[in-house]
Amino acid sequence: EVQLVESGGGLVQPGGSLKLSCVASGFTFRDYWMNWVRQAPGKTMEWIGDIKPDGSNTNYAPSVKNRFTISRDNARSILYLQMSNLRSDYTATYYCVRASYFDYWGQGVMVTVSS
Amino acid sequence: DIQMTPSPSFLSASVGDRVTFNCKTSQNINKYLNWYQQKLGEAPKLLIYNTNNLQTGIPSRFSGSGSGTDYTLTISSLQPEDVATYFCLQHYSRPNTFGAGTKLELK
Image 1 (cartoon, rainbow over the protein chains, first blue to last red):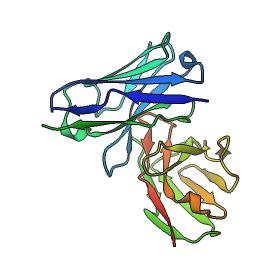
Image 2: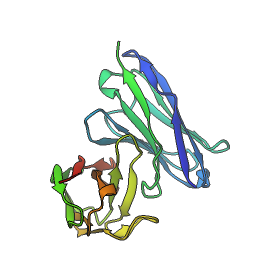
Image 3: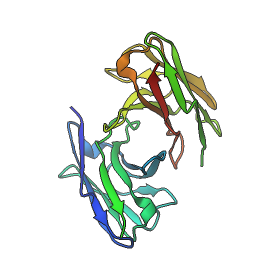
């Protein structure tokens, strides 16, 4: 069974940093592109970015480029999202999503950016 | 960016009704359109991928159709467990974009 479990969320002050993790199981992680997606309260889902199976290529939404970095550890089947210089409008639930065709989603992890 | 325009924003229907959701895109996405169901507090669940392919384990009362810029999700006979929010995703080109959800409630 495919499982994606995010962790690392919480309360952070504006301008701060946070690193999210997503542990994958039930499939061969190193074979798949992976995405991060977020949903702010009451808002539409927003694609953040993705990463190639070998980690050699990443793509980002303009809204987070130069603030967020996606990386992965294929030996441990973990996807990461490093977030820096956070703003209050980044408050959202963050999901990791398998990019086969956006088929499997994690439960999500809440990030609150507030002073 | 490809803009997504879903309709309606809210739907109220009775058990057994045929229900349809629509998603219009701002440009041709060559059928790279998925539909999801999300219940409160749960992860989104993929129902239909690439316009008309039923995801494994999804009941056959769900179906999808469309082409070009117009796409539809249909529930042929609404069941109580279908109460949820439904949304679409285009994964034809980056940035991948989502439609706002349509909330489905029982009459």
